[in-house]
Image (tube, rainbow, N blue to C red; front, side, top):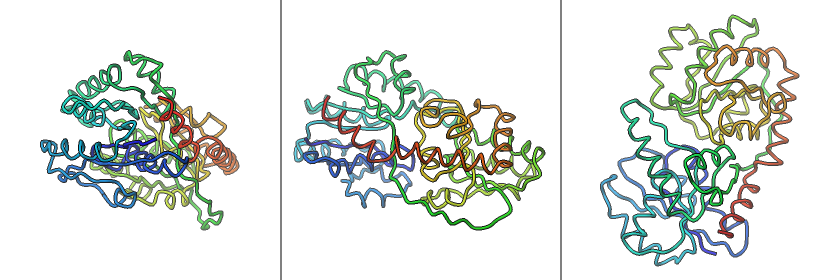
Length: 364
């Protein structure tokens, strides 16, 4: 079976990471051949080295208004003769549908769904209705199958009238790594978060919670915020106003997440929305105690008081109490981290995801 794995723009988020995993599906099962292509606007600023390392065909265009990608992608389809086109993100289904209409391509389209589009600013709120409305329409009438990353995502699409028989749940998975049991001796508890600094990620709520944590415990703690995004300046200002500069470290965008995780005792993700967070899986893989919110697919990854402490979103007091509980209880941190690592190995490795995905792609 031949699969054309297609994405518009690459970026640094979860969809991009999954795209690279999809690119190597052919190594899992004999008879599967994957051709991966990224339509790449050159005015976008992101690291393209992972694409090159994965052997992805890059179709370079000047910007979003450059439609030269259409003929180039049609030629690639003719050359590779795929049985299905597997596309991703908000633009992927639009790209494939345009090719199908303009060139009469009848190859079935399978889409991956990692969640609805949320506008980063109020000025772009109109894009939510446009992108999401178009996406739901194409899922209902054009796509042969939609691979969703959580049961939560499946329910969300059913509510938007996407037929349930088109939806297949395949939880995200990431590559396993060997843990380094050695730890540097330190007095403070180190907390970490990996997140794009968008409004719906709740980092502002976390900073508010840290003000309470400082008052609720005498144990020293510090926090690393790994990631960048439109809220960075506002968050830095909040940290300064709260007098937390000596506690909070803005580390910016990083590629060596496993190394950062190794240095943390607690991982915290205070999002308002999640479908199936890769950051939580990375923390589980590293055997870290986790604090996260009861939203989306988070509770499909971790269970409260078994692999994590889960709290309601947008509640800094609840978040603060959970963090203090872990800061002051090393045995609880160890238990939750051990359980999280075990569940990761049983459910969320990259190999498990690949096998589940191949089953969906070959039975459309």
